Length: 513
Ligand code: BGC
Picture 1: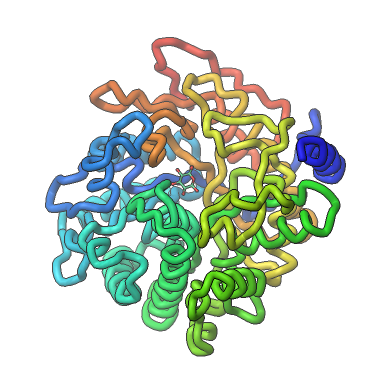
Picture 2: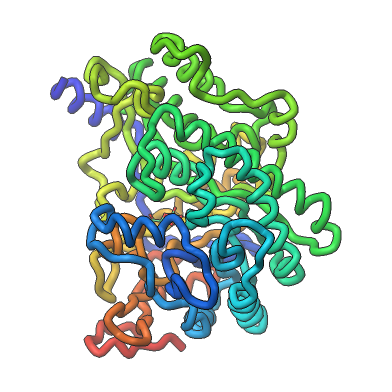
């Protein structure tokens, strides 16, 4: 096996060049291309129990099960954006971003999850943030759900309970009513794979349910129907008045076969369809419904395992039609790639039943890939190019925004590895755009360091460093902030640009002007 695997990796290297950035070659972004930066409510806001906010599954998990979090910390204060949002808008202005992608905290708006009681201070907070952005000419790009489910709703099964389709619809309606006059870009749900597989099928994200093979598929169906409900709500009742657009953000890993064998090719194909096709296919494909690979594998395994029906809940014809076409754009969160293979080493590797067993593939990182501070995140820009080409081919070239892409470090202002990563991914993006991919914009994860879920504050994704020990959570631009700002200013990708005014200073007083 070891020799076979070594040979596979060599073969894969042969067919999967890394898409390195050519020195000296300045490339232009399309005229209307837009740049942004992303955050999410629980990761930055703090103010966890202030002004009538209810509790989310992350509030409860970090308080009752701190052992789930690498440094035992919580998002109770985080970057304190609930109080410091004006400073956030200042740094967004410093960067001259076209848009800022942030999420709304469901329990800050509806403390018990239901729409019978609206928390006015929560409405005020987002009104202030949105108004501050707009008065500085920055477009708000708003995610309706980014993982902080009201605990009250989780007590009723959360995303595994079909009643959530109405609960989510009621919540979204409040946001359209209160903010839709000024918000023109909506994302219904961020990262269904993380919500469903990591939250319900494993213990990697709240609510840490860990019922793989069953719970993640129940969740997926409800996430898709919730998304579609809110799309249609907007389309039928708000679009004509508010003139905005609404999509979904899907997390994608690119999978490359580890060798040229048919088994490895099929392992990579199945992996893609389980990882992101499961969420994209029902919305963006011509046929609708779950990908055939997902339906086939789960049905076959379920039958072998003695289940009376497939563990993947069916979508009825009406549901297929309702979900199909329910997005004005596709948001893609993508960071990395894996090599996939399928051989005898799969025997006993995964629990039965499980998502891993249903996919039927082993995943590895190529030893040559550069690694970040996050053990899952390796730099493979060619993966973005291939992903964009595949999305264009499979889904009739939808409008795409890259809604999350970025690099983690252990900290420090001099972040050349982040600079290399962002440049090489944007270079790959431009390769795909030049071959016809319809990419409208790109948003870096993240504007500033924040609470990285179960990794706490140990992985820093920010263009701005945050001093979590300071009372004002001082935000200081890293080198990458200066480089990103220049890209936005010139609408070009210049691999050799070095910011003149950047010096690594200990006192961290750098300003961008
Ligand atoms: C998620 C963020 C997360 C980031 C890095 C993104 O896809 O939406 O919440 O912090 O990945 O892991």
